[in-house]
Image (cartoon, rainbow, N blue to C red; front, top):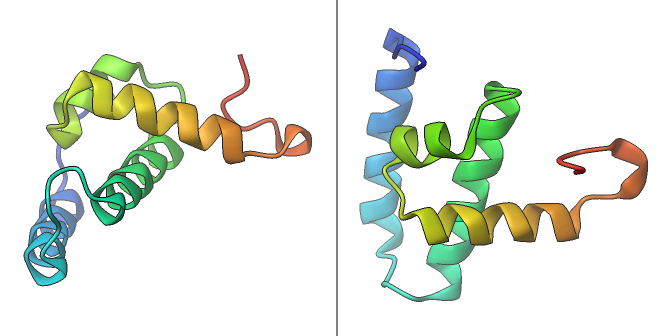
Length: 85
C-alpha cells in the first residue's frame, strides 16, 4: 500500500473541490472522463501498481476502474507502450 504524503492529501482536497465545482452527475460522460483522468494520473505516479491499489486509493468502483483502464488502453498509441498487456 502506498502511504499518503502531504502533497497527496492536499491534491485530494483539490480533487474534491473540483468535483463539486464541476457538478458531475452520476452516469454522465463528464464524470466518466473525469474518472479516466484520475485513474490515468494515479497510474502515471504509481507505475507498476495493481488495479486493487487504484480502486482503494481513489475510492472508485472496481467496474469504473476497469472501464477507465480499458479506455486508456484504447486511446494509447502502440509506440509509447503505455499499459500494454
